[in-house]
Amino acid sequence: AVCAFVFFVLVVGTIGMAAAPALKRMNSDLQQMQRAQDQASAQLNNSTRAFQSLTSVNAPVLSSFRLPPTRPRPQFDAAQAAEEERARTREAVRQAERQRDAINAKQQRIEQLQKSIDWYDKQAQEMRLRGGDASVFTKQSEELLRQKWNLQR
Image 1: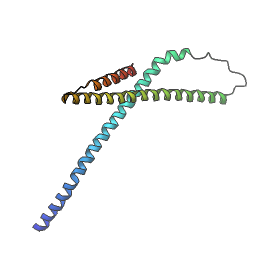
Image 2 (image 1 turned 30 degrees about the vertical axis):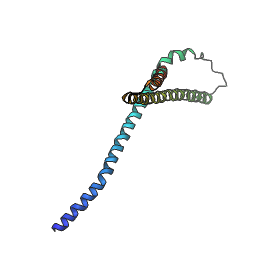
Image 3 (image 1 turned 180 degrees about the vertical axis):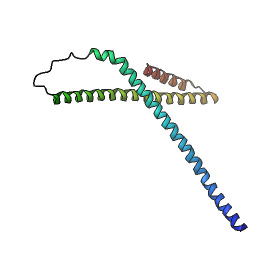
Image 4 (image 1 turned 90 degrees about the horizontal axis):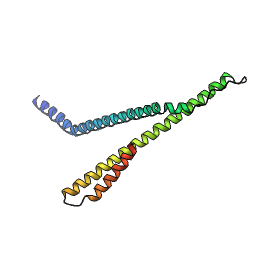
């Protein structure tokens, strides 16, 4: 009975030791996916807020471009009116989607610039630690920072 118990403990221990790295890797992957999901959710919320602010800011401007109402023609029926309303709605949705895509593209470009800025700053810091001249990295970082600020305006 003691031999069977020792054998069982050794087998379970071996399986546990073999599975531990895989469990750690799986846990880190899960945490990374959760962070990515949180970032995507935050980006979606930011894009939604930006879109809403654009539409609320542009609402008075857009209302000034509306055509005055026209009198319905006698041969004009309800089916035509409904189709025209659907067409206007589709066009408004397309325009909103274009604006959203432009906002998303701008946000992605800003994120890319920030990653590049961080990389150049890190390279400059490492160059300074080695006693070298970091001015090339610093100049590139400053240029990217100017581009980022111009996009954010």
